[in-house]
Image 1: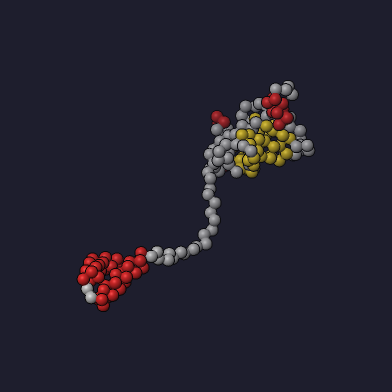
Image 2: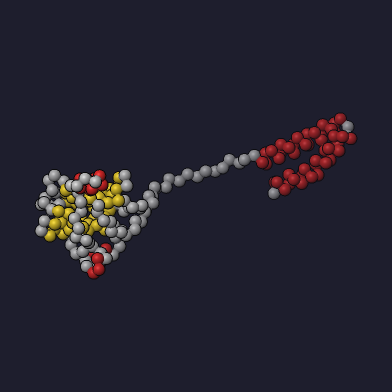
Length: 191
């Protein structure tokens, strides 16, 4: 409403003040000049930016939960530590790599069969013990272990009991090469 009133005042008083400035007496000219100055000051005041009211709230930081896709990574390398009480598995990291993976290890003689699975944990108990068509982890004691991602490679450490094992991919039965064997194969040398 004030803008409408100001515009109407300009329409009525503007031409009247201009006519008085050109044709009026000395005192009337002074009054017309003051009227135009008052209209201009009111216009500037009406268009001045009003101070914004800012309300600050302390919101707790809620990290974005990235849902990782279900996948069964194939370990590319396996490294038994010197005391044979830990097995480090590594594979190429995928975009949106899960922070944890479920691992099942099953010793068979000197072989240690390893299954790795990433993905959501809903309904996991029911499907872990399903052996049909290799769609889930085999029966056994699954462990949820943290996955570390560095320079495009994901890895995890599986604690073992200290026996000497040869790590084998649980799905295919093929041996998982050691880091040294993998580097030798990529450089063309025969291990």
